[in-house]
Amino acid sequence: MELRNFKALNNLADTSDYVAMLEAFDTIPQLRELKEIARERGGIASGKSVLDIGCGFGLETLRLAEIAGPEGRVNGLDKSDAFIAEARRRAEAAGHPINYQIGDATSLPFEDSSFDCVRAERLLIYLKNFQSVIAEMKRVLKPGGHLALIEPDISTITINVTDRALLRKVIDYEIAHAVEQSWLPGPLNTTLQDLGYQDIECASRALIFRQDLGAAYFKSLGVHAEEAGAITEAENREWQQSIDRLREKGQIFATVGYFLFTATRP
Ligand SMILES: C[S@@+](CC[C@H](N)C(=O)[O-])C[C@H]1O[C@@H](n2cnc3c(N)ncnc32)[C@H](O)[C@@H]1O
Image 1 (cartoon, protein in one colour):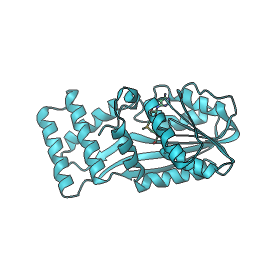
Image 2: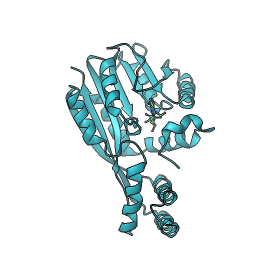
Image 3: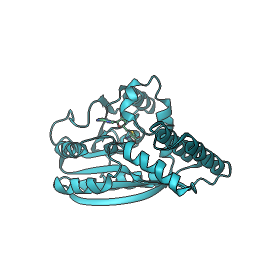
Image 4: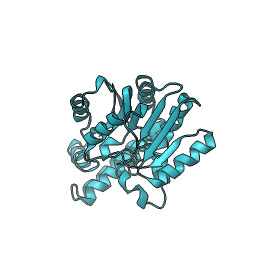
């Protein structure tokens, strides 16, 4: 199970692994709490115009459309045509007229001041110049409109493998290479301030991985580290076995910090 390279999605014959992984994450109670706070603070309500950027296959977009209702207007934009196709299929099955389109977050295909609410989730960590996307979000928000962003702090990932030296090697390799923005919350807060957003608020949760998801995710990190020569083959074997032993006893304890930033356009 790979969480890393969503940029490669269009090259995959099958996106079902990604869909399964995002659906598994969606069941984690701490993430559900953050999403609920994001809807409240993000101003999602009946009749609102809403944009979900990097919407994937529309897991949250569908919920936004339910709240916005027939008087509202919901748009979902993503770079992946495979995800947009799946999002359209799900919206049709649910009977929600969501406007999905393929596009790039760095250059939003919308007029200035088009939306009451703009949101994104697990998008900015993949982007080199995330600041320009935050500026684009401000451009398409109406004055007084609400922004809501949910992103992980990848630098906080950890698991209860007892060999701490090995743990640091594997985790440090992943933090340095997995995504473009592994230490996002601090720079994100600064960017919102620098761009003149108002009412900036932050909520956070430590997400606790379920046993299967934790095992699959953290075992994949050992493979990445070995492939890159950051750990030896023997060390990776030890890493895999440690996680398997924890998994057999149902004792995996693995976490990652997630942050919700909300703000308004003046
Ligand atoms: C981890 S997925 C999150 C999907 C969805 N927001 C969710 O939380 O279920 C990241 C998404 O960002 C999209 N993405 C990455 N770079 C993008 C860009 N520059 N413009 C638009 N979408 C992008 C990917 O195609 C992928 O669907």
